[in-house]
Image (tube, rainbow, N blue to C red; front, side, top):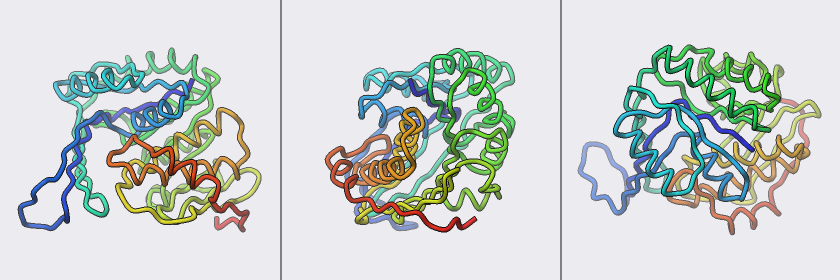
Length: 293
């Protein structure tokens, strides 16, 4: 089983408009609402691919109740720890790209954080891989992911970390099995890229990986237009499966790039287009390169 963690859960609201412009009124062509947050998106993708996965995290308030109902209706396996604060909303406006408005999230109490750690440890004992994704809500310490990395390791699970800022920096110091930032997050967190295995997302350019066996560059065969907000989460899903199955790095990166690209052509995060995925996977270019770090 692959366990995903979303500490800053969200209700994702997507608006489609012909073209986004400042200081004007927009007529929305389509609206979608669904449970979101990076770990939830990873779980959706894993479930679509037929893998056993479970989403956990923190969930509360009226928005949290909407999130729970949507996940139950979509048959996404989940078990969230209830909190007093209201789960946040994330609004994405898409035209030929995506503009995202993300609320900060609820304040979490020390007692709620303690309860989550106990629930997490129980789930991690049944998991082969743990995916720690996204931002931290208010009230949690910067080392929250570092704490969870250690708990997962004690439970015998491998760990993939995908976050940003101080949470990424502190979590990486606990030495997860793989860290997956994008290029901007890597620079912002000032990580030592030699400290842990690292896969860096570079948008349409693909991915760059530093591994114990060398550095690899993987690029898609074509650039796809659409909504890129769930592309990184699809890549994390592919890499989690690769960690679980000990897939060699070139094959793991080819899979991650193809799955990431297949998410761009879908309207909302957490979905992938399987036909696009299988088509692109055969043509991803993966080559060994001199390590840039």
